Length: 289
Image (cartoon, rainbow, N blue to C red; front, side, top):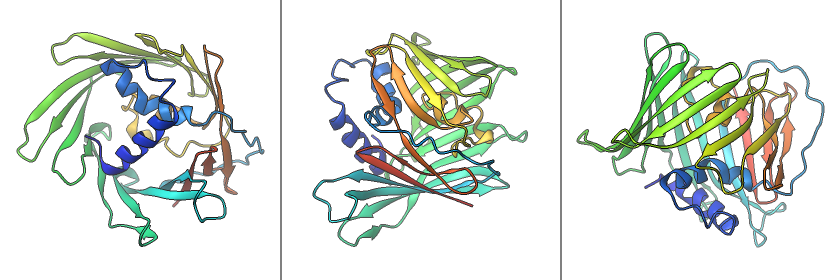
């Protein structure tokens, strides 16, 4: 079960691309939907290649999510779904809170904890907790750094009693030009892997999977602006969200071996950071501190 905001977005996205992904049935592919479906929504957009000035360091404060509704009363047709706020301690991300939009009050309801991050004494990510609504259930990821290039991540579902269920784990091997992630069942059975290629700037430029994606290998192009999700303290999070957290810059074009092309419209502030990323059916608005 996903938190309410994640459930709403997953349902919306699944509707948009259900025909393309109808053949995806395995556990691996179901998880991959959550990573790649938001990117698939960008088909048909145009990238605003405005020159971006030199950026100074900023921290993500909030992001709002909107979807397009042709029947909406707003001038641009976009209606709010939810927003997230980012909390820090000593400049490290420690918590993400979520707020669901209430169409009756035209405002956001009271916030709730969505994700929590914990660190070792050396400042490395040690644990990520994703809360499942207000049920007390949560998904926990624990990070173990075996050496400078290898990380093991163990994931399990937990409740208020502290029990561990549905455990699986993955191994991450990183070099300056690649990342390999191998996923294992709780019985140590390898069931999938992802292979990422990185460019000289540290951006993910392609990803292939085994078993393969139904649409083949995926390729990314980036702008020259800072990626607001580039939290250096989350350097261990190389799972399904690798492109999001690793890349130095922002994705502006996605293609694949099936010759499907996606592009995004990105708007920037005067310090070179994205303040809006738009597609015909969705929009994200960013603020910084």
